[in-house]
Length: 42
Image 1 (cartoon, rainbow, N blue to C red):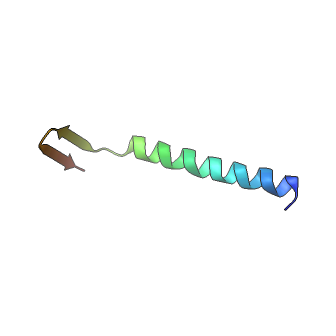
Image 2 (spheres, rainbow, N blue to C red):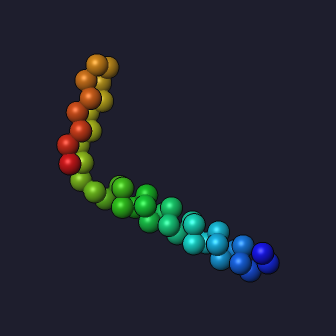
């Protein structure tokens, strides 16, 4: 694997990770996590 392929692969992985984090932060969900009580709503 040459350097150019390695850089392109790293960029693709980085963009995919950032895209997932953005999607995860934008979806509306309610999460209540207390000791003994865990409530999740979407």
